[in-house]
Image (cartoon, rainbow, N blue to C red):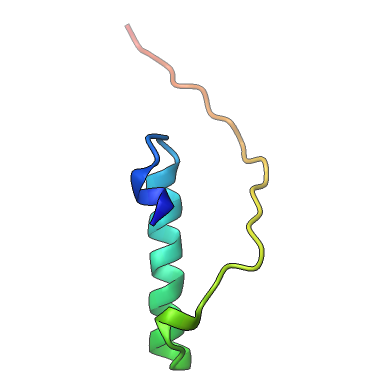
Length: 55
């Protein structure tokens, strides 16, 4: 719920990831969504790609 209210650009992909993980847990493992909680969140450094502008 907090991610919905945050103005940061990265909060929407994280929110989608959490919703997707919850949907997978309920569909494949028959877990209850109300009883799920996040135990660990980790962000690793990814490759940074520069945007090139042709012109």
